[in-house]
Amino acid sequence: DAGITQSPRYKITETGRQVTLMCHQTWSHSYMFWYRQDLGHGLRLIYYSAAADITDKGEVPDGYVVSRSKTENFPLTLESATRSQTSVYFCASGGPTDMNTEAFFGQGTRLTVV
Amino acid sequence: AQKVTQAQTEISVVEKEDVTLDCVYETRDTTYYLFWYKQPPSGELVFLIRRNSFDEQNEISGRYSWNFQKSTSSFNFTITASQVVDSAVYFCALSERDNTDKLIFGTGTRLQVFP
Image (cartoon, rainbow over all chains, first blue to last red; front, side):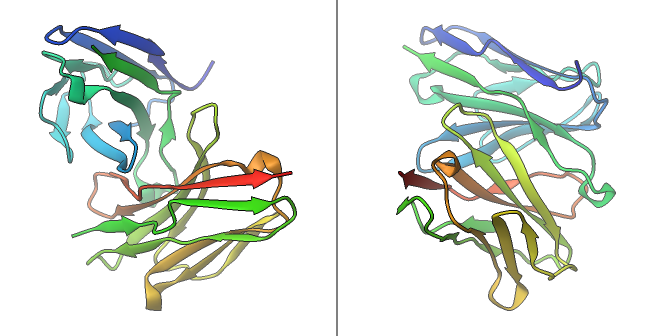
């Protein structure tokens, strides 16, 4: 089925552990994004990618690493999880806005760091 | 710097009331895009509308309407005859034409519609 899929949907991890959140899209969209959602902050951009092998930092990149070896995948890794990274993470994909497309979001991953 | 402000944190209405969600944005670009997303209690983000800065026409889609005013940098969203199913968090977002397509979100407005 066409779409954007995040896994896992829920994750509990311990402080200091490395954890990777997966994101897969089937549209061949060039752009992919990772946002985190926290109460009082809305959604904030962590990292984004304009194409395979091209990534850049967003507003809140510290403590996160991304890669994009294939157009369809954009994993987000927390190298050493901290309690402040407890959040809901959303992956999104889309084309350039002047091509009349909008970002489509995955279902979200609720991450709890204990 | 770009910024989106949704000053209303939470709004409660009774079914069939009309409700307007406010969105004020800041940008230095002359070309930009504005969006509204809905996040129901199930948590997913649902795209509602995209508007580019050159199109100031108001839009109506069923019970939803949007009022875009560049003079006041506002992109307000009105739900007419609200229903319980409209209960959700609504986000306004801005994207500048910088070839990155990044979305800058407001903090959201939680709408509760009571029967």
